[in-house]
Image 1 (cartoon, rainbow, N blue to C red):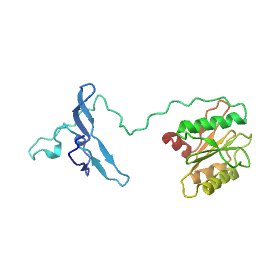
Image 2: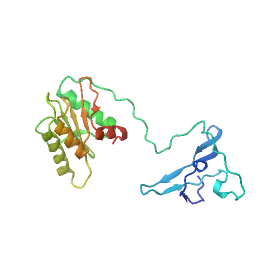
Image 3: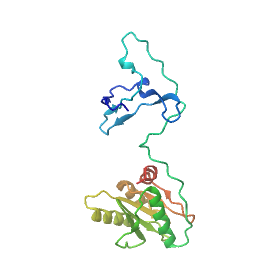
Image 4: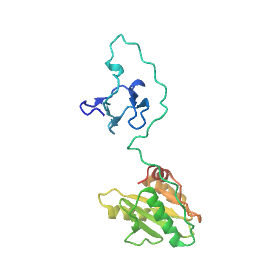
Length: 215
């Protein structure tokens, strides 16, 4: 990056502005690379000046011929800020209630909740797992999880969290009633089912999003 040049606000995105021709410092290959940018949730975008880059199309004279859009680069490096892909989750066979809790804890760690532990309070049924910013419940009973189970978990999390945002998640061996799923969707609570192979499966949109983004 050109440390002595200020970032430039981006008001119009063009194809030629999105690429910069540079020589790779590692292999020496000269090619086209994505021009580094910073963006803000408010919609503002700043383009970071790059040392050694040729002049951009906006710096050329009015009589300069239009640029031909470059062909796609042979190699596009991943941004350094991109999350590293998670390895595949390794299931654990579920033989009893304790195995179900173990699988849920391992799955939450796989999602990025590393400091999982048993929650302080015992729910009316099942077991709860806590982590920073998370309260999850595991229900190994051979009955569908009910609306009351979902409401109790959510109320407990809200009472314990105070002003700190907390994600609630539910793991059930026997699925959910229609009322429970509707309530969880309203609360944006991720729901997962587990089978004896020990691989949790998302059953609503909130769970799909949690799997996609992680903790």
